[in-house]
Length: 88
Image 1 (cartoon, rainbow, N blue to C red):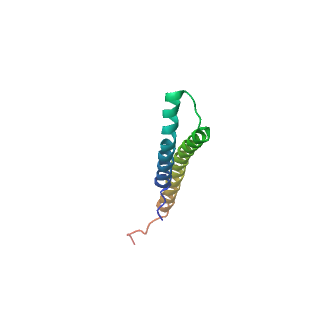
Image 2 (tube, rainbow, N blue to C red):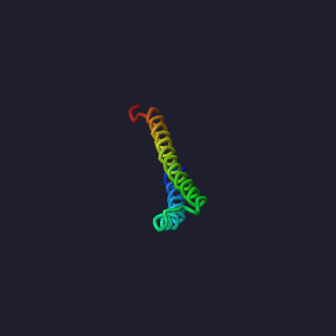
Image 3 (cartoon, rainbow, N blue to C red):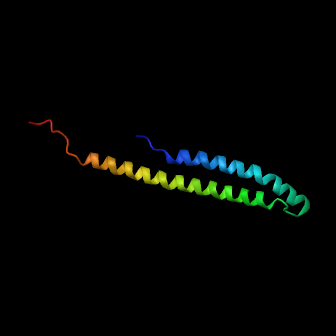
């Protein structure tokens, strides 16, 4: 079985971050032009999506470490099984 949580969560994180940046660019442009943020819900949404992207990437890293640890334990348990001796 192949478990690759980092790949899955990295892709999810990339899409969330890209969408967040796409939503935030017009808000920043308007803020720098006028000094006001009239689209506050969009700014909050962009912030929340970026935080979700960072959290998703962090979870991917954590789950990838857990998966690698489990694979190492499985390999060590296989190595602890005595092999068949060729001497009789």
